[in-house]
Amino acid sequence: MERKTSRSGEAIVVEGAHTSDAFILEAGTVLVSRAGKTLRTLKPGEIFGEMALLTDQPRSATVTAVSDVTVRVIDHAEFEATWRRDPEALLPIVRVLCDRVRALNALVDELSQQSPQCRDAAAAHGLEGAHVPATARASLNGATPEAPAGSGASSRPCSPASSSS
Image (cartoon, rainbow, N blue to C red; front, side):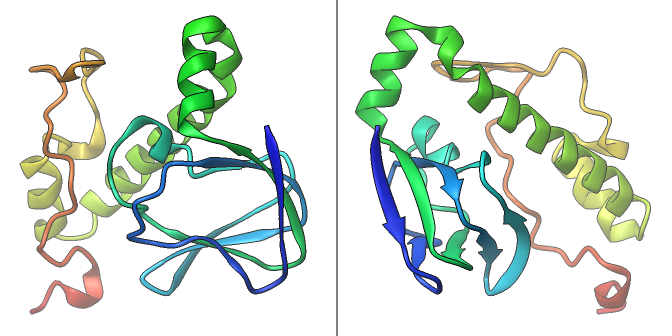
């Protein structure tokens, strides 16, 4: 894996970009943001950009160095070769994705209790009460009937402050 360094203030990943590398943060701290709003701070040992290894979608967030950082770069070709050669080596990435899905499920559950619009949005995406069915699954060929392809955000407001519009 290639190592890359970035200076404080430098964007490592840019929201909307069509790139496919993932990164393991070795030293320093990075800030993850979407539409200019901070989502979280990552510290050494954490992974970011992992969704790009599995999808052909634009970046969902910007990741900016808060301090000078060093990352190990996992490019798409390396990821696929490792997947074929030693699938167990990818378990840390799978665990990160599972943890993030759990966190999002908890958030959907919390938000669905906030307003009728939020409950409607959760229901529209098959997430009523955010209790995702145990049968939800996906295949490498795309969504299965149990895992609907449409998982984008609702266009309706979903917060108490904006529910009066």
